[in-house]
Image (cartoon, rainbow, N blue to C red; front, top):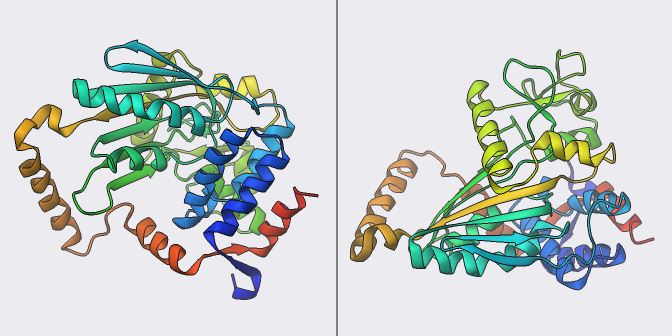
Length: 339
């Protein structure tokens, strides 16, 4: 993509645009702030498929009537190390913001705690959740089902969502170690971006409606996505379905897409977040053992291997200094939402 095909925007301009569109579509102010910051984070960190492209996704979901614009999440202190937030059919971001302080408090008190977010609409990556917890010194894990878009290994019919898994580890004096990946071969948004650009997708991302391998983005979206690593990704996807679905009393990906009833809106369901306080295990020895973890990271990076999230942090530094480049065609589509 050439420079003439893009427009450079400051992060403040991205934030203002996201807020304007979300407010135009009727989201309550609290949801506007929470949802917009997730999109800004995506653009800031070079994750275009989770940046302001998601405004188009939100606009469609709102028009379809599949998210509550004024939802008021409610926190339930349901057990010593458990907290539940009832999202009331609203976006997950505000529900997580409500539950995060209680989750962190319980983790520090008991060593480990879990947060279940129920009846939420989720359209974004999970790394913002685990990163903010790791920045506060907690080890964090998060996962969520989505819509049934992904076939199991050896199958041809969608049953799993993209079912992302995210993990965060606190690092003294630096950014946390964070990874976030779909259990599908790629995030669905990446295929959507290829479709918009009229570009083929790599082999192994999807199959067509007849179950044949395809590099056509449109055909893959109409057929099924594939798990990464064959049976290994399929097993992890199953785990996510179970622990962020029935375990917390929420929907599986097949149930979510059935509830969608053909609207093609964002998934509705649950999210599970687990936080662990290293000091709960280690007590006074926590600093020494975290230093041992740093030796592991140095051993990886010292041989030229890239740690997950390094590329995001590098993109973050550039974006904060130089702004971000947004495709003009995408920007035109987003601005049209304000008409």
